Length: 468
Image (cartoon, rainbow, N blue to C red):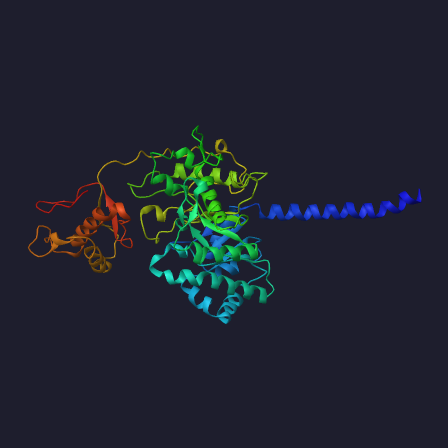
């Protein structure tokens, strides 16, 4: 009897200890088990910071990724419980990489000052640095900058804050089939290998910006829309290694995993730093509409918040922290029309479409979506936007005319399109001539918001606007 009694006490302690540990694990798991939002600010009509944070809370986002360390935003996020990722801007990487005191100061001013009231849990160094070939010297400063930021965090005893850098899928030289994933030769050994070593040693994430939309829209003949946006289909892909893929996102993620494995790093966890689907775009941009955007993001959320986690075929049952791009449609983003239409919200805070960031609602529980418009197959021309700032047109004309062969020959004195001799008429011709030449190789009809696409031929009398 006495023996049983004396053993009951430690047994009870073990029970309560195990219960406490289990509770801590469940709490930590539940705390992390949320969807994040990318909070970009490239717009001249966006709401105030306080309003934006209110919208984020209303949507029940558990994480926010910033593209800088804006103090107003960081202050507004205090005491919200939302996990926050801040960013060392691309232009600051060189200075941070060269000086520990600069890194210490950056962490002090942008992390320590706001922590712990603002729940900063990640510092990202740069944004898609390895996609910028015009400034490739920064590539080799990236990992040294990450090391210095990490040392600064340790100096302030912020051991748990992770350091990483978001990269685009163009960091891969090969992504198909997924098992053949490999990093580009120009960065594999010099940048990626030391980066992966850093991420392994600090138990951080490989942050990847991954967009099935771009892969699908560039090859819709061979990739079905349903495969790209988690829809119903019967065309799974079987990799040569035997793994079966039911959607394009998993395929892209496992290509990254394969690339890391080829350099000897098997266990670095992934985090999706950006993904999404555009809700609108230019007339010639396939599949960019509310219908497809809603289906992609709704299904993505349910997939990423599945319990237990789904992971990928190569890494099953692993939770992947995910951020959706973006909070708002941002009207000052350069590039084609899709670039300004990734938002879950319009700038006034109204929803572009219903979205449940908790992943509880099924597709059938949402209100019907507007049907997708049929693809536009007619002709298009690029001309001056009616709302364009006329003072910005001369520099835009100079740029367009400096590209290609005889781009602006027709608007020279005595040529067919010289008259009427106005800056708007000359700009329209120059914009269109440039776009028709370069639209299939990355050229866009934007010119800092001064241009737009039209379906009516702007040609007149002897002045014929080119079309290809």
